[in-house]
Image (tube, rainbow, N blue to C red; front, side, top):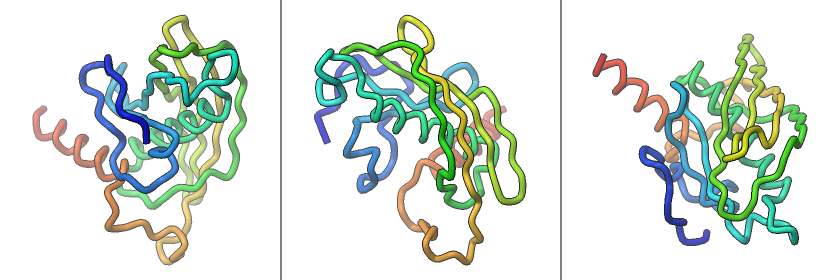
Length: 167
């Protein structure tokens, strides 16, 4: 993973854990904005295409996890939620040096699936919009047993409990 960039907005910290894909692609941070948990990253050279704009794969990676943040916020005690569908519309570009953040606009949960829509925001407005569907596998499905690892779900649940205790 690259060295953390300077000028990370106050209240953001690195995404927990150290062995998953987002850490290889990052650095990516999480924090709060507009009364929701969000992900953010500063577009660095290794995130960029030859035009020095954030590569679509990086934007989709952050949006995928940003949508999952919506599910985690609505269901902090849930199980790992793999992506089953992700549709993305690229609206504008993000240049090297830009700070990009996720926003979740809609979350609907059923017993077996979560449906989420959201967007990535940059300094000039919407960069990307997306819709995702995430499955909720059975707790007995060993493929999705991620317990015991530092996770974003654990960090969100802990912060939600702290906020409740303070209010």
